[in-house]
Each structure stands twice: as C-alpha cells, then as structure tokens.
Length: 450
Image 1 (cartoon, rainbow, N blue to C red):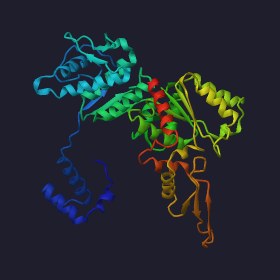
Image 2: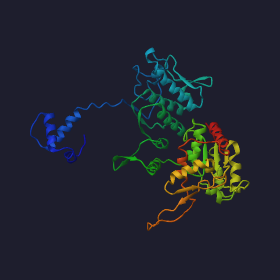
Image 3: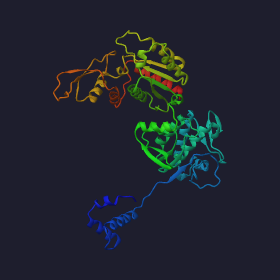
Image 4: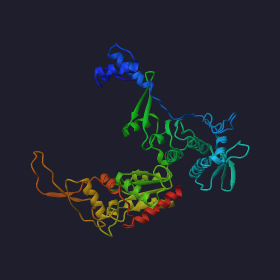
C-alpha cells in the first residue's frame, strides 16, 4: 500500500490514531509514524479483494485439437481446446441449455464477417475441425482465409469468457482493418469482459470510449502515459507508422465539404438504416467545399480528386448547390464532378436547396441556432429553399469599455458544427425537399459495398 505519511497525519487527530492502533494491536506506547503504518496494515489485512478471472490471449494463435482437456475450460487461450469447448456449447446438457445462446452469438458474428446470413459453424463428432456451412458447402474454418479464422477464434475466446479480464496481444495480426473494426463492435455489443489490448493498430486506437495508453522505451525504462487528447492519439499513430490510407480500406466512402455535413449525413443514415455503422460499413471524408468554388473543371487538383475513385468504386460526393434561386446554373467544376462520380454505381448528390442546412425544417434549425446563441439571439432570417438558413438577427454585446451597445445586426458567421450537433440530438425528418430519395441512394450504395 502506498501513501504519504505526512498527509495521513492530517486525516484524523493524533489521539485518534493512537486509539485505533491500541485497539487493533492491543499495545501501548509507540509514536505517530508507527500508529499510522501498523493501523493501515491491519486495515488492509481485513480486506478480501476478489478479482475476476484473468485470461491471456497470446499473439500466436491456432485452432487445434487439445492434447489434454478439462470440461468447461478453454485451456491456454492459444486455440488448443477451443474445438472441445465449442462442441460443449453447441450441444449443451439439459442443465446448461443457456450455453447455446453463446454458440448462437458466435454464429451471428460469423454471418456478419462473411457477409453470408446463412453461415454457421459446426463441430463434427471427432472434434478435429471447426466446420463452416455456407452457400450450400461445408468447409473447414481454415479454408476461409487466415483473417476469418483469426477473428472467429478471438470472438469465440471472448464470448466464452464472461465477466473476466482479457489480456489480448496484437489481435490485429492477419486481420484487415475492416475485420478489426467488426471485432471491436462485436466485443462491445456482445460481451461483458474488461479488455487490455496490446496493439499497433490504428483501428483499435480509434475505438470510441477506449482508454489509450502509449507505451515507450526511454533510456532503458518502460514509460506508460495515458493519451487523452486527439493530438496525443495522432502522435501514437505517427510512432506506429500509420498513414491516412483507411480510404482504400473502407467499404464505402462519402465525401462531404466539412464536419457539419458529416454530422447531418451520419444522423440521416442512422435514421434510414440503423444497421450501418460509420467506420465499419462506410467512412465519411472531407474535401473542403470552397475548393470547388475557385477551381476550374480542368485544374490538376480536380483531376487528382476524381482519380480517388480508382481507390474505391463505392463512393459518394455531397455538394452544396450554392444556388440563390431556382433555375440558377452551377459551375463547370461541379458539373464535371457530378458526371464522374455518377459513373459505375457512384452517387453524386447536389443539394436541392442552397446548402445542406436547407434540408432541416427552418423552425427546427433556428431553434437550434437560438439554443447555441441563447444570450444574443433575436429572430430568424428567411427560411426558403435558397435562403441562407443559418442567418439570424443578433443582439449586440457590450463594448470593451463595458458600455451598452445599441441595436442588433444580421449574424452571418454561425457556428455550423454546434448547430448541427444541437439539431441532431432530436429525431431526423427525411421528408424535406429530396432528402429521403438522396439518403436512399446512399443506403443502396452502402448496402452494395457491404
């Protein structure tokens, strides 16, 4: 037990320490240091600390028949003994029928990672293999590729352990980033273990709500630091040699102008297709909308942007029309991008209104603006299809000399991201302009990609 002796002296009075020590030790005399030290040792000795079971999944794993096996045990978590344990939960005894639910979870995960709803595992009577039934065929699990073999093995280990501490070493070995993300989602949604994962994978580092610790070797000593800020996590990725190449690995990519667009589209997709998860079924990338306003259709930057389609055919591009009235034309750059991104099953979405915010009912959008600017909001601007939907009348604040400023003005520099977050805390209304049809196009593209 570690503690600061001087700090403990101020917790209670010296007479109280003396009395506690005398009662616990049945002794007299001594000094304050002895009373504190021996009292705390006595308190600690009375504690019955029960830790959950702790299991270690090593970096080298392989499914194999067990040499020796104990009923209900997974053995060393390297893969030996897994077949026997799966056989037990596949056909449990009458007093363990609930174990079949664990087997069903693993089968459901297999269907997810293979993309085949009918896929399921089966353990034959000789317990020499894990067989997979899929597409009318029966094959050993190993024949599906090392990645599927590894991810099913890891999911099985973690499903069969309940309420345990799982120490996992480099689970990303042989796993495509998409399989890594699917494994993370499965573990979060279907297991109740505490995981300690040693990894070099950016996919695990980017896990929402995970505590990330950066382990380094400094002057012959191991240093461990918790990484809380985004820039600290980025630093870890740099140290690991990660590059911004997840674009190539994402199943489907949606290109948007900026962060507020991502917030809206993610919310609309969740409303239309709640089964899709960003980072697993699709990714959203930023291109910066002002780029399209200032370049001509033949500029090299536009050519480079169009060439990104060769990295991923399942791609969508969302652009503000920036039109001031019905019938206004768009620039040649946007026309070219619509033509290119619409090819081969891609989606080119030009907003029916002026900007993406025009897809939100004006009353709801302005209610969110009023919430963000509580102390200065006066009234909304016009809310037509081609109006600047975010603009609002704003009360002037006090000047630098604390004098009261008179009047109000039209605020045009609105925090789009804060407003988007506020809007998306409520339900999504897809029946505005052509929003429902456009979101359906994205859903169809993502379904095809997955």
